[in-house]
Image 1 (cartoon, rainbow, N blue to C red):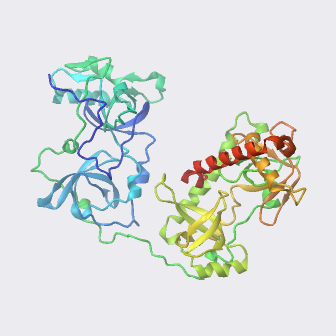
Image 2 (image 1 turned 90 degrees about the horizontal axis):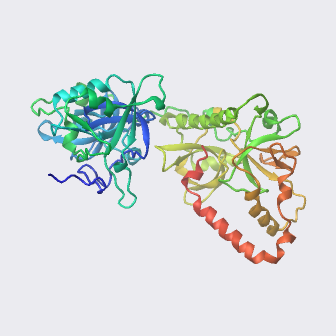
Image 3 (image 1 turned 30 degrees about the vertical axis):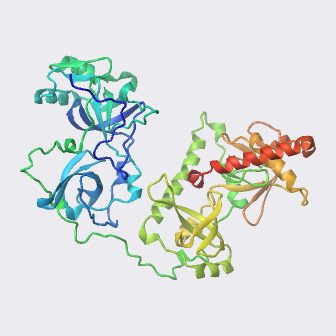
Length: 534
C-alpha cells in the first residue's frame, strides 16, 4: 500500500517561495462560489465576501516589465482587455516567448506573452489568493482515479445548486505545533437553494454517494491527496501542441496610461494652502448634537491621550427615543467611515495629488493654521490612506510635525508625504472633538493630573456612549471644555469618582511605580492599527 502524505506535515510545494502570496486559511466554515470543477478531489472556490474587485488594476496604472519568467514567480497579466490581475507563472514557453499562467483570484489558466507580464509590487502581495483549492476529503473513487463519467456526474450535481458552504475537515485544521499550511484544503461541501438558510443545507457528498457510480463516502477524511503542483494547475490545456494566445494577451496597448497628467494651475484657489482651512469645532457645529438639557452623546476613544484633561469623543445625534434598536448609532459611525473612504478615493487619483513644498508651508503660517492631506502607508491595507492633518511645525531633515485632525494623534511625517487639501474637504469638521475638563485651579500640580489619568481609564466606559455637559465652552483651537460627564441615564458626574490625592498618600511610591509600568505597557501595545481610526 503506497504511503499516504501526512496531512500535518509542513507543506512546501514547488510554487511557494520567500515572496509567495499566502493562501486563505479555513478554520471553520465559509460561504463560497464554485469557480472551477475538475473532480471531487480538485475544486476551486472563492468566498462570497472576497475582495477580488480591489485586486484588479485598470489604467492609469504604472506597469513595470518583468525580467525573469521562471515558473513560480508572481506577476500581473491581462484578465480581459485593459484589465490586469494577479497570477502565478505555471510554465515558461520560451519558443513562443510566452508563459502559461494561473490567475490566483479567478481560477483561470491562460497563455500570456512576455510583453504582457509585469512586476507585482509588495503591496499587491499582501492580500492572499482569493481562490481556494479544495478537496472533498471524505469522498474517494473505487476505481483509484476519477473517470470522465464520474467527473461529469459530479459536475451535474454541483450545477443544480446556486450557493455552497465549505467546512474544514478536522484533519486539515492548522496544527499550532507544526504550523501546517496545506494549499489544498480538505473540506466538507454543502449546498443551498435560493432563499434557504444555512440550517437547511444538504451534503454534496451524501448526494453523490447515491447518484454517482463507484464512489465511497466515509465518516472521516481518507482522500489525503498530494497538494497540487504547478503542472496540476494547467489541466485546462493538456495538449501542448495547441497554444492559444488571445489578442489582448499578446502585447500591452500602445496607448496604455501609466500616470494621469497633472494639468492643474498652481494658483488654483480651490487648492490654496493659505485659504483651505478645516472647519474646527465650535458652538454652531455642535448645535445639532445638543439635546434639550444642553448635553450631547458621544463615544470616547482610548487610542490617543485619555485623561480628564485631554480626550477625544465622536459625537452622535441621539435618536434613541423613537427607535427600538441601536442601528442609528452604527449608521452615524458608518457615515464617518464612508467619508474617510471618500478622501481615500479622491486623493488616490494621481491628478489630485499635489505635493507641498517647504517654503509654501512656511508662508501659509502667516495666514492662519495650515492644513494638508497626509499619505500614510498602512501595513494592513493595500496602498496609502489619506488623512487630513494640521501642520504644526516644519522641522529639519524634511520632517514635519502634524496633528491628524480626524484621529486626534500627533506625529511626524516626511514632507514628501504631504499634499494640498481641496477646499471641498474643509467643510467637514473633525470626526472627533478634543475635550477637557475646566481648570478650577491654574496652579494644579502635575501629580494630581497623573492620579486623575490613572483612575480615569477605569471610570469612563469606552464601549457605550456617554453624556457630556451641560456646561460647555469652546476654546479658539476647537477644544471643548466640560464640567460634567456621565453615563447614560445616570446623574452622577464621573469626575467625582476620581479619588482625592490625599487618600493615596501612604502608597504614593508603589502606585506611582504601578502607574509608570501601566503607561509603558499601554504605549508598547500601540501599533500601526491605532494610527488609523477608521
